[in-house]
Length: 117
Image (cartoon, rainbow, N blue to C red):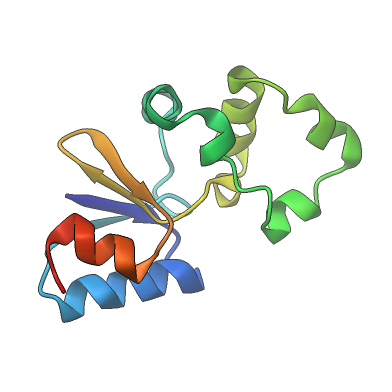
């Protein structure tokens, strides 16, 4: 299992702590430091849709010029943005066996996903 995110993101920190407390091993990939490939982004968008993958609530999105925001109207443009600004990717992303298992952190969902009550 891999956990993708940004190490200083508070939501990623919560997810990592929860996994550690429940003794669930997850390889962490910081896509701000290590990047994320176009192929991986395409795979994720095929699974969950670019709209779910793009973080439109974060500061990265809010700081974008309006013309860039309005240009993000399809998968191609969303992936281009996420490649240049990895902070625009929702996080954390849990990937198991090459499939997106969950995006974000919700303790109840994690309990169900990992069979931990």
